[in-house]
Length: 193
Image 1 (cartoon, one colour):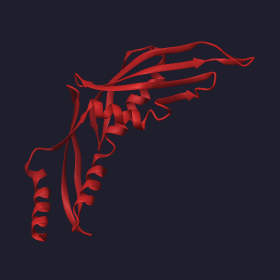
Image 2 (cartoon, one colour):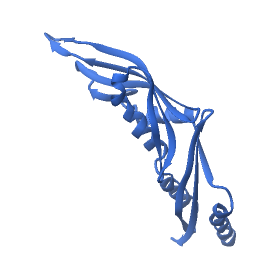
Image 3 (cartoon, rainbow, N blue to C red):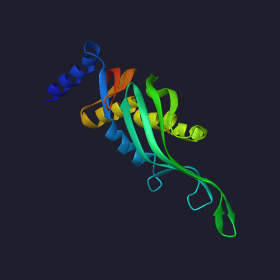
Image 4 (cartoon, helix red, strand yellow):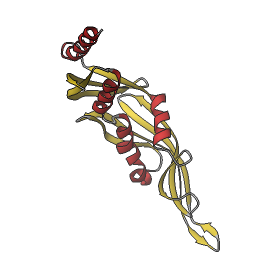
């Protein structure tokens, strides 16, 4: 039994050197759920400024992530108000509209980055407020360090020895037909527990 596990471990260690790079695919529906659950955490909203109960606030809600044409798209509904409390009532302008931002994914070290970020829908004057959601938070969620995730998976599934992930490198990232495909290469080293 132990010999079979060692052989399986060696096969895993040798396979990446012989085969094509490994890959992981993220479906847009799965990513939308993860974005809503991990980023839009304030009753389905992502507060960008102030608080909803005040006269001055900005938030995004109803996120939807899509992958097409080599780009990652984030569509959301934006609401904001820049008002003053006058005799117990909020006075001032309010905004409400849908906004869509997109960026081209690429490998950035051991994580995923987005470049060529643009606002495809919405009011351009709010771009600086909305852009960090796409530029920083979505890549952090998607590329939450695949090396660490792979190490944790291997460590919890092989009882007799530890598998150390070595020489991890992202190869490329593509976004087409509702799927974000991340290709990476790595090698493994067995170590005693």
